[in-house]
Amino acid sequence: MNDADTESNAKAIDSLLNYETVKYFGNEAHEARRYDVGRRRYEIAAIRSSRTLSLLNVGQGGIIAVGLALIMVMAGQGVVDHTMTVGDFVAVNAFLLQLYAPLNMLGFAYREIRSALVSMEQMFGLLDVAEEVADKPGAPALQVSGGEIVFDHVDFHYDKARPILHDVSFRVAPGDTVAIVGSSGAGKSTVSRILFRFYDVAAGHVRIDGQDIREVTQSSLRAAIGVVPQDTVLFNDTIYYNIAYGRPDASREEVEEAARLARIHDFIVGLPAGYESTVGERGLKLSGGEKQRVAIARTILKNPRILLFDEATSALDTRTEQEIQHSLEEVSRGRTTVVIAHRLSTIIHADEIVVLDRGRVAERGRHADLLAKDGLYADMWRRQQEAAAVDAARAEIKVEEPPSFRAEGHLRVAE
Image 1 (cartoon, rainbow, N blue to C red):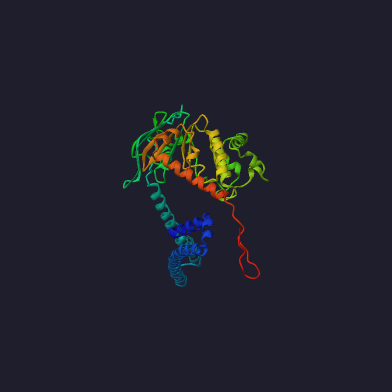
Image 2 (cartoon, rainbow, N blue to C red):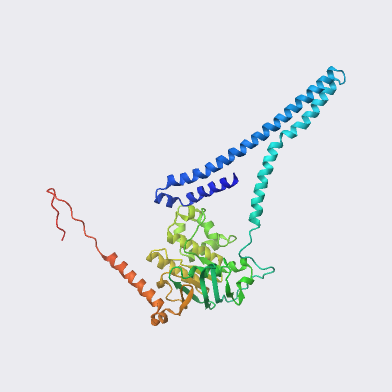
C-alpha cells in the first residue's frame, strides 16, 4: 500500500511540475489515466489491508465476547449455587472489564506496528545505500589562495562501457578565464560536474591551488565555487529570497548590491511588490534573461573565488545574451573563471580556449591562434558565423502582402 501511494504521488507531482509540456501535447487525459492506475493499485492494497484488519478485529471481538459470556455464566451459576456472592459476581465482571478493554486495542496496535515496521524497513534500506562521493575521514577544508585549477590526465565515465573523458589536461591560472568548447556529447558539462565533485574521476587528478579535490571536504569545495547554470531553477518564493539563497545570512543591503551588479535592481524596484514579488513555480513569472540575472546576483552574493559558467547564455536571444555577457564579465573580473560555451562569439576574449572532441583535448590556445590553425575550432567558428549570417539575412527580408481575391474571382498579380 505504501509503495502504491508513493508511486501515484510521484506521478501526480511529475505531471504538475511539467504542466506546460502536458498542455503542449494535450495529454491531460493521459496523465489522469496514469494517475488512476496508481490510485487503483493503492485502492486494492488499502482495501486488502482494511479487510484483514476488520477480520482481525471481528475475530478478536468474537473471542472476547464468547469468553466474557462464558465466564459470566459460570459466575452466575456460582451465585445460584451459593458458592459465590453477588459481590463476587460484580468483582468478576470488573476484572474482566480491565482485561478485555486493553485487548480490544490489540488490532489497532498490531496494524500500527506492522505499518511502522514496513516504514522502518524502507528507511534502513535507504540508510544502507552507500554514498558515491564521500569525504575521507579527517579531510581538511579547501584553502583557496589564488584559485588555480589543474586537470591532470583525467579519465571519467558514468558507465565503464561508455567512457566520457580521456586523458584531459589543462590549467586555469589564478584570475584567468578558460573556455571549454566542443560539439554536443564532447564532455563539456562533465568537466563542470567533476569540478564541483558531483562525481569522482576514474583516473588522474583535479587540483585547486595544489590540493586534490578528493582530499578536501565537499562543503568547503562547493563554497569556493560559484555556478551560473544554463537552466536557472528558482524557488517558488520572492525575488529577495531567491537572490539571498546565495548567502542566506546576507543583509538586505548586500542583496540589493548584488542585484545592482547583476543589472536587475532597477527591474525589481519597478515591480509593484519590489523584492517581495513572487517568481512563481520554477520562476515562470520571469523571462529567461531576468532569471539569468537573478542567478548571477545569487552567485555574486555568494562571493566565490572561482566561477563556473555552464552555457549560461545559450538559451537567450542575441540582445539579452549581450547584456548578460556584460554582467558576467563584470562578475568574473579578478576571479578564476571556467566558461563552458556553445556560442563561440561569447568566449573570444578568453585567456585560453580548450576544444574537446569525443572526450579528448583536440586543440587549445587563444581565439586568433586557433583560427590560424584552421582546425576543429576554426570549422566550428565558420559554421556558427554562416548560421548567424543566414539568420541576419532572413531578418532583413521583407514579406510582401499576399495577393487578395477580387469579386470576379481573379487573382491580383503582386508586383
